[in-house]
View 1: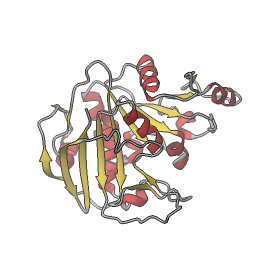
View 2: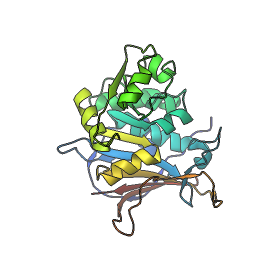
View 3: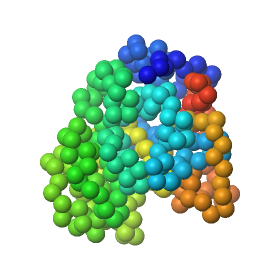
View 4: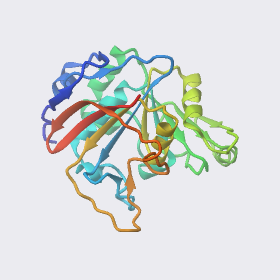
Length: 280
């Protein structure tokens, strides 16, 4: 594997407290500041997008962000860094099924820096990998997959009553917690997810890795504090009726209720831009 060049900082605001990055991570990323949570966990998301706003080609074998980033090692390094700072990682069923053999830890996305990620987690007071939170309305999941059976992470599945009934037909590992969330409308609200996560393990930081419908729910309920966005120099293009996926799906904000962020950080690595936007 080629050595990763350090990111070049283009813009950095003094927002938040610098995290104690080990030397190798500090050399590659620079200073990473994260605001202290107040009243509830600090919620942030991370995506890579093409220049024309595509985050997934949504084609079998090409659903992941790797096709968008060009399988960038630098992007994976940043993904691992963000997972290392999080107490919980929230994943929708679509994202889960697109990478069903994955486990949502820093080491899994970039093993080369696994030791450094663990040092960072320990320095901020976290002994275990982040809680992996899978959100599924249908409960159509295979509990034999690694995130459920490897015992590398504690996993909780939030689902509906019907989804719980389906999942209970399988034999689950002791490290898997299945919980039915019963909202009036039969949907699983972002606020309820956040409240339930906090009951299981009081969290300072929650990373939402998607998919776009789940991220859209967090934005719609005004629970997303910050968006990390890797901008790839790729133009994907759209046909009129294709299935490509953008950053937010299933929600529309503008023109009635537009969401405006504030850019708080910008870095450059290779041909990628690593941006951070604050949403209040």
